Amino acid sequence: MSSDPLFRLLSPDRLISVVDIGANPVDGAAPYQPLLDLAVCQLTGFEPLDAAREALESTKGDYENYLPYAVGDGKTHTLHVCRASGMTSLLKPDVRMLRQFNLFPDFGEVTSTRQVETKRLDDIDEISAIDFLKIDIQGSELTAFQSGRVKLNSCVVIQTEVSFQLLYEDQPTFCEVDSELKSQGFQLHAFQHIKRWGLAPLVVNENPRAGMNQLLEADAVYVRSLMFEHLLDSNQLKHLCLILHHCYESFDLALKCIL
Image: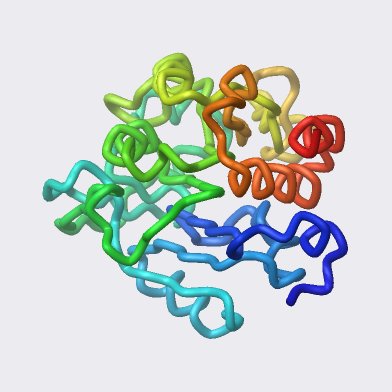
């Protein structure tokens, strides 16, 4: 059993099931890392880029498993591999929009393309449950949510990248993503890692990565709405409490789950 006192106190029936769609660790430690460190979760990660997946495999622990699938609508799409791996996407970068921001024309330069078959989240047999979903797939998040409504029905926390500037062609807006998640019973809880970026051609203090006020993107944390707490079973409340406590220090909402 885990050494975590809160996990022992709550005694959920099973470990927290964490799913990471777009597991390439380009932005540092994952939000669920504290759960892995405490051995209170089982992670299934998806990463279609071979080099990134191999790097994850080389350092994975006993509670981690990585799969090569690209999650989407179940159809075949073109994967646009960009110079900056963090911008690789099933959507084509919008060159006109990239020119508005320092460095982004280089980041979003497509170096190669290939056809990939995507899998609907609801059709992935390796996932039996989702309690905590972290997703960052460069503009295709909405499609993943729409293809996973059945499995997301038991999910209690979603951390998704949201964009305030549409860097890809036909990229859904933040409002569309927010509306979909609300329709599935989630509410916006917090913004993590809000990214501001400098508008070209001005460069601040010779640092082209430095931003002023222009919002670019953020990690948005959605939680299962406690307005519908009567629809949550005991294990969902326990898992929600553990995730809020260890990953986000949202002790007030964690306490409401206990109560």
